[in-house]
Length: 260
Image (cartoon, rainbow, N blue to C red):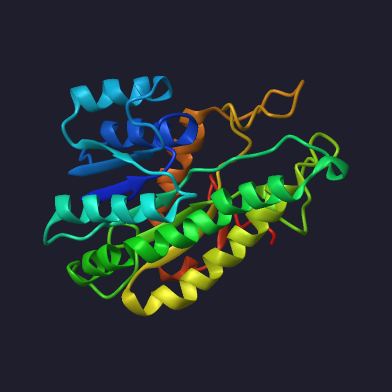
């Protein structure tokens, strides 16, 4: 397996679940990224304690205040990351932060749909816009003509729940606002892939599996089959092999093509 080799990466929602798992696995690499920007809402809060411990032991972990539903927060984070990187760009942006409202279709509200869509879909849109200059800088500074995650890439953590063809787990959890937001995120990923390809930036949507996280366990009475470690390890293996052939695709944590 070709090793994923990035100088800099930013992960949103990095204080728990898959986001924290990404940070941990990046640190375990034979050649860890020079800079790991770990974005989370409240860097000093109780939910970020594990992340704080990692940052205290690893100087390449930079905890960054980042609320993906807040354009001002995103712009401030982009400015901070840009200042930190200087003349170097950002190789990899992982839009991982997400939310779910455990409700049936009949119980969904305008507020639920708006809040979920803002975090799960508009957040990755705004992140891509704000960090585009840094991603372009990384692409321009990387040798070779091909596209890869080691060069410059946006990875949107989506879900099979957003697959219109599959409609996975409807009987277990309807979570309509979540499903709609992830279906929209898949289209956003396609749009980003079309718009950013000319800048040398690879864009892909990834389904991490049904993972044992707080959010993944939202369906009462069901234990997700995939551990955080297995999911992240699988996704990193997929990222290491992505090329221009996979631009705008929807893949799972094992590299399989997912139905739209």
